[in-house]
Length: 168
Image (tube, rainbow, N blue to C red; front, top):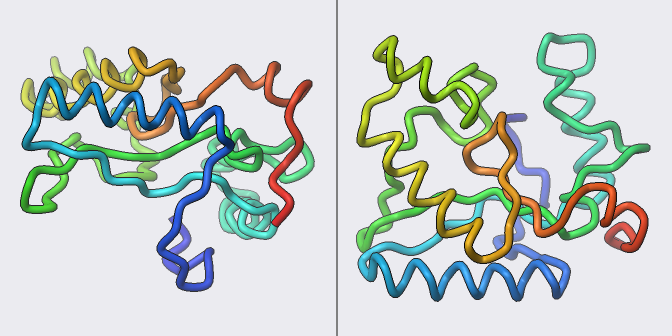
């Protein structure tokens, strides 16, 4: 979204242990059902400085609703959210119809039917999204209606009442 590295070159993704357990379950489910596919993580636990940078990028734009205020926090700030996709055995991401972090109306599940009807999404793209959503939900994640790539390991209210933000 920002066009620059928010994590100082780190290729590691961190999650709260509860979210990590669910991710392992998702990996097992996908491995059983579609052995040639694997999950590719785009973003996981997000430090507050990264949240502040993201928020600054969209402040005053029509996209400001897509990025949580650092004071409120995102599930990413607690290590309870993950952004990911499915890739094939060659490391090529499945076509989901929009890029990760897209602000298009059809980036979310709630716009899929209309986007399919208008030809903005194909049946293959919707099937790929359905596979990702099915795997993640069966592993215990909650999907975000506006972003095909975003999954939370618990409800926002539960996390904010019971979990501390990531300390980094």
